[in-house]
Image (cartoon, rainbow over all chains, first blue to last red; front, side, top):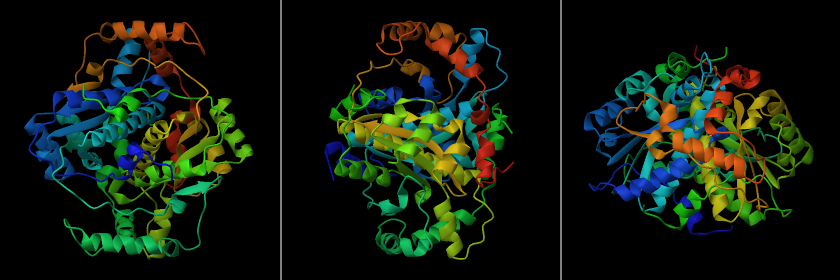
Length: 250
Length: 250
């Protein structure tokens, strides 16, 4: 394997959820946002924006939506927003008549938001900070939209907390590479539990030996639970996207 | 601004579309995939997979879909796939009865795919290689799904080409940071064309002075064109996602 310092850092990624009581310096935030700003963007449209929450009431609201108490205590909390509001306004001011942005526009904005979030996370980790993504903000899109005053044609797609780590979690095992990368066509298997047997063992050990939230669990058990779970708002995310003014194209 | 080597690299990002006739060494590919494998993943579900295309006929097919001739000549071409097939199989083998994955599962897989793609791009650039993302594979999902034998509960969300650069494009200007990052609530403006005036000038200069594909254009002109454009398949992406077995939840 060909390595360098940066790749070594990337291979050490862990979710950091607990932070020192130390604010992130402005010059550090500036670097992190600069990396966000320079990230690749679909057709150059820059269809994503960031809301930085400094108001404790707002942080508490997001914490209530995402149901993770540590969120409210994180030094920094960002919400990544699919943002077609800005471009719709620009087009209108130039005289374009557009009924609504489409799901093509939505997915391009979502790609922009996710790419930006990961690029910033890499920068964050390179500076000795840490953080984690918050998918749980999708559990109540209306509450997030209302709290952050998000206008039509925007949608909160991902959250992130960050700070100086006061947390040292183990690195979580991952599925073997062969299961995630195929050549030319999608590789299927007759028996997936056979294929993941070693990884399953590693995952049992991981859950059983970690310091925080230790439990008897395994990857395949988590998969069953997760695939069986129905989550009203999150399964119906398209209704919220439509409510924000996007044309679902159906 | 607080800087380090890695952040400097990230700030230099440009899309590289033309490559030397030099294959990427196996040990380099191994590093790039290892970074993909270790990327943060929603609820640990690892709901994304990669298809690496080495077959020239398949590369040509993707090139035809994405309508960019340089794709077929790139040393490496990856397709990032939202992948709930694997987890559905694992759950079934363990006896779970699940009718269909939901849009919650879909978006988690999409997040995994996008985060993985950006994390790999950062690794790629740190190794002196370059590449670009291909959103255009969405112009004909059926053709990609058929060519790569993608089973139910999977969906091709993003492409990427990479190699040793034979291309030296200018760095493309970006919207000012203040327009993309708000504090606490979403910042709206009375007149967006006023707010972007300086950036608009930069974008005109950029299009007018670049070596390849030089033209008279501007950011706001591109925005109008892009927001006005209707693209049958891409606007109707949800129909293709539904066809792949996902429950749209509507």
